[in-house]
Length: 470
Image (cartoon, rainbow, N blue to C red; front, side, top):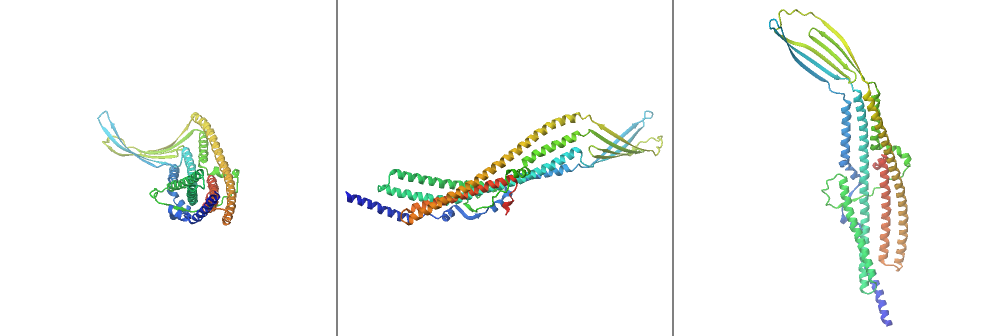
């Protein structure tokens, strides 16, 4: 009986030694070989991604809105076209005594010129200029937002690519452990529960690897769509991405950044434009409702010259009327003398102004409403700024925690390597510790990218992403 136990123990020791030797010979596929199977081998830099920024549909729509606003400024700047008019006429006179009829052909010509913009046109022109500035802010904001969006997608895909070889090694190790447990179970060295735990670890590792592959493909599709590409290359392998690093030091707190946020926000600018336009309209309505028409004229025989100036519309009208010919002119008609008639007329119109006062009262209420909306927009932007700042502070704390965790994992791996070299630990223990260390380093990169993403969102809100050009 004692000999049987010694033989069984000797068998287990020999089996474990054989298992360790076989495990050392079965090495997992290297990370570079694994990545080469999933990518094109080409490198796609973030600067190359930004080069496709102008193909974005969102940016294209913003550019068209800006061009429309610019054309509105040009249209409202122009006061109006000059106009020419011709008015031919026929006049017939009949005499009751002898049935005589005389026909006169006349012609009236005129020209109308706009000498400047009226008060209403001037108000419209200033509103169009403010709208153009707002559309420019909107175009710049859309560009910043797209840069931030592209970086988030790009950095997320880069993290997935960095995680992929770690997950492959983890899956290979879990499969290796599971195969070893099967052999040990067949020889009665482990329980069925331990085998099932190994199967569960392998399933978890395979699920993580498959999820990473799916996330890579979906993120790549999203990046291609965000770049404005047609997606015809969607079946190709994903290129290798580069690590993007930039400084994330903040010199100011939210209180010092609020003015920059308000000055670069198109939504806040639109509310401000509404308040300004209402104020200008109210100022115009407060003026006296009057207009002056000055009309000098000159007549000589059958020819008339007139000129009319309209103060409110800034119009100058010129007119000239003359006879073109006479048919069946009476012989007894006396010869007309050379007579000159000249003069000037002034017409002054005054309005009671009641309609203007009623409209002004309505605009006062509307301006108060727009001012409240402007305050609400300012509070909303301030809250968004403070929320992003708090997320940025927390992200930096998470980065420090990830670094500390990585240091602890490195010390643990060194301890496992020391035990392995002393023959007190299995090769799989060392491989597991190395994978855990690599995963902890990956989490440091994940936390660092999160800091950069939030920092970029802060700079987008404040209207300053020039640091990306460096």
